[in-house]
Amino acid sequence: MNATFPKSERLCSKIGIEELFANGESRRSGGFTVKFLRAHIGANISTPLNVRVLSEVETPKILISVPKRFQKRATDRNRTKRLIREIYRKHKAEYLSASNIYALAIVYASSKIPDYAFVEEHVLKLLEKIQ
Picture (tube, rainbow, N blue to C red):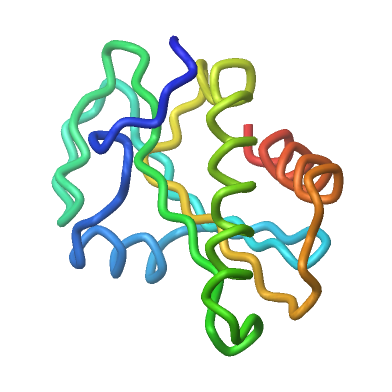
């Protein structure tokens, strides 16, 4: 698994996002919330996300959000999302390569503008929890 973050790994579908937030499990740490939806390996299921049989290793579709309610300035929100994307991109191979997670949302809900070390610590802690 290479350390890139292509468009095909992003969760963009409105139906997919609704399904994730309606039926997904969640974990929290340090202002971060991770919602995730597991796929069933080896079973035929049909959901709006079109979860198919996972016979090969696939990376989950991911959504990263920083609400305007907590960080008013767009530059702060963009920087926070950029940090989260970078840490996810670097560490997705070691944490999510063997998991059966199909969709993942990382939401940062704090008014504090985080630095790289803070984001890395909490995002990696959450990725460990959901394995």
